[in-house]
Length: 467
View 1: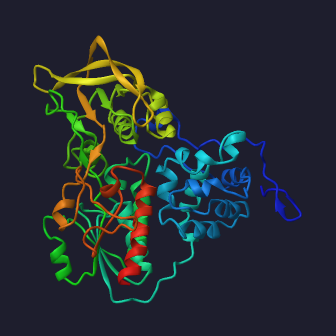
View 2 (view 1 turned 90 degrees about the vertical axis):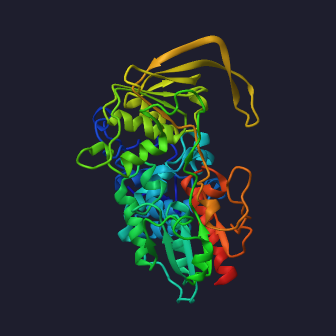
View 3 (view 1 turned 180 degrees about the horizontal axis):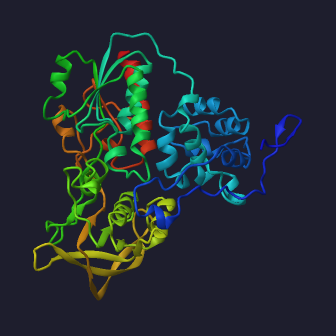
């Protein structure tokens, strides 16, 4: 399987098609929560690595928010030196098994892959995941001697995990405070098992504990304690990574009807509280037969595909623009449609309608058409006069976005912007020089890899200023 060489240099297999994803059959996987993508085998990974052009100016590195040296780890796969490849990734990213599964590679590394100009880009995400799923091959990270400094990390999502890991390697005594009863943040409550298995996230949390990071669960900083108390307890710095989990309201009549959910609530009930196994577990949720989800991002896709697995005979994702404008990963849209999800474009909800029993029985929508581009360059949806219809449903889910976690403003006396997000500089420093912040609580809802990048940057800044 190794690539042929001339004078010691690999010759890329430019005529080979992109290696197809290794997916479970759609009709079968839509019945349960098994992982959709089984990942590359060794043979598939090497074949795909052989497609890499080994560019002199690798744009893929520039396209990665944490600048992973992608050509180097792909070269290691070609040489079948998988442990070395994983070590190369971990120089920049602590979560390759996670990012390989959930990052929007088509908008980042793969989106600028030179091979993509000839045919299809190299499957960088799949190759990253292939290495990330073999953590036993990685070298043990070097850990600096203890420096006597303590840092509190608030939130154990991707940004908090990245910051905590970097600080632990740099010799800090790190404690992560997590509001839920388990670690991982949005990785466990927001992303379904079929896309990101909980065992993968647990493996990363276990790795942090092996570095000496302590976790305090069921700890809502901003309620049970605050920044002043943490400093009194001996912490020298705080990193806030609470995320942006407060749902955005549709602000339409009927939004408070029974069986009208916000996506975060719906997904948390299933992903974290195991509502799909009620009454074996205590948390219930409505298993609708006709489910409509409003939104076009990854969260909307996760919600509608979850509804399908909970027995929905008709699962619709309704979006006010067209399929082409949906911000969701193309892979998620592809998977959803293969599993029987219907896409209803160019509609906007007007009202949720109650049935005789008081629960939602339909949603009234306004049909739209695309007008002139908005400030982001996307064509603005415009209502079509008189084009209104009712869609029957027994569950409706709003997945139109999130707002800043409201606990952020309760943690300490730090400056927030008008939307409630923490203001931080390019190093993650807030208006209080002892407090750093990063991830979605600073940027608004973004990607896992961007949140991780913010955590790494903040860890470097904390090390520089107090280490």
